[in-house]
Length: 87
Image (tube, rainbow, N blue to C red; front, top):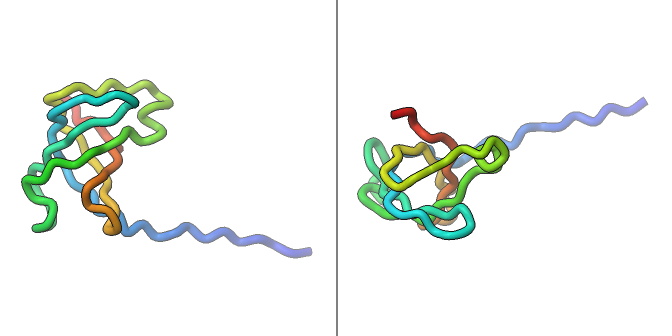
């Protein structure tokens, strides 16, 4: 009998907070990075999409909302919105 062991890939994503400045078609948003962030991301506007779970549960994101997003180290111009902060 053989067993298959799956390993979780360690995430190298950078998690930062920002404010949605513009809503675009196809669940895309422009987000201005605020708060604690690496030097290369500070005060930068990223093109972001909604994470799958946020689409699944129909979480509404509007301009002006504070959001938490993940940015990969490979492309620092795009991100994925993973959480909408409560107002």
